Image 1: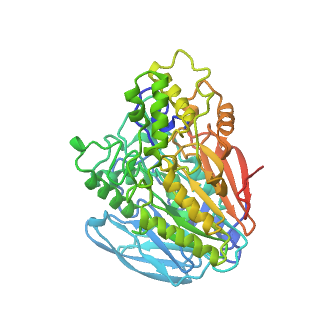
Image 2: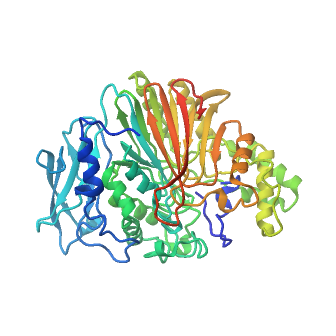
Image 3: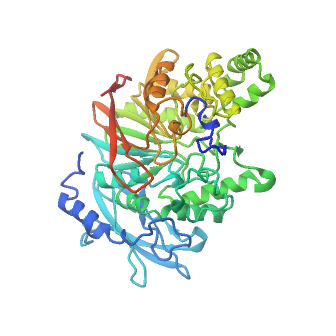
Length: 573
């Protein structure tokens, strides 16, 4: 997401030219009393009260960063912990069907080494499908990690499966109350993180001094560039007790967006990377990817597919660092036209009919595009109901509302007002506003949606990045192609922070009115999506936290939006 610094105490412009740049796990698997009481007040909760209230300024020794799991299949799951000592240490890991570890289902040894920043990621295999498990790590000196909880994916018929979808969690803006609510609600089978798990900025950039919650900024000073910097930033985020608890209780799939490396990143560079002072982009990219794969419960494969019984195939995509073409910057198109609206409009129209449509531009690259097309077709042939994309940026076409400029007051700087007016002109020229999303790569989007149509897929696109909530009916060349649930952020501010002359509800209504694919929007709240898949319907419940400036799991409200299988339509409850 574009987040360049504009010291106005509001969300920066380029990101938001448009206005942006309970069910339980099966009782047979884990008894209700065993799960609830142990994780809230007993064994699984042990150690949480002793965790730091703010990010640590020094590296935590031993098992100080908790445990995590991810990359589940029907018979395996990847486990994670970090154990820092004064020398390489062989850790024993155990996976059991009970919290007392009397029935161990898998185990082994793995060595924590400094060249991997003391992080280990064993894969437990030979597990039963559709089952909850407990896991832990034990050091030779008797130190024992937190007890984690994880689960395998189902095989065959499955009545329902629950996903918690989160993204855009800038620690400086507030508390991770969305993570805490997921743990408290405890109605999730798998957490999906759409990216911006960390942010790369230094102090007083994003957030600014006026925006930051100072107690949350411990350990943040300079922008992260080198491997040691990225490792330290992950350590700073992973010191948060709510993030540790989320990883402790649920497996996670994670797709990095841009801020895991640098703002508006692509294969050959990033908006927030200056080679003259920060060195070669290739070196920074390698450092960012390495730290991510060390500190996160993820595989080393940039993309992958996961089978959720006969319900769905979930495709984890890579759209940032492997193949993405440099995003367009509309300022480069507008600047030569000066301040003349007619010249600006003419330049935008020429761009719309020319470079913008270049079929060579890509987010995924040809290899991944073919893999996804084949995967969706195979999923449907195998009888899977849903084809779900876990990826970073909004796929729906979104244009600026023509009413956006109405009501701007004189207190706004003139250059901000000029950019708002230019944003309206982009829509007049037939252009969307955010060139860093799929809107900046229309030919690539058309290829993906065409492959979904040819596969007869029940396509569900999950997205983050924008900090606001959107629900859309996707179409391609005039025909229905799927639905998109785009989630609001955990903490990073949305449109309410800078479109101050329009009430969030009114701005959301303007946005829906201006865009045929967009059916619902929320542009003023933080939280997450709880997505439930069944054989006949997919439902996203948007959950809005009451606030993020103090620790609380109170909800301000919810919004349920669903789609019947085969309809490619949304029902807004």
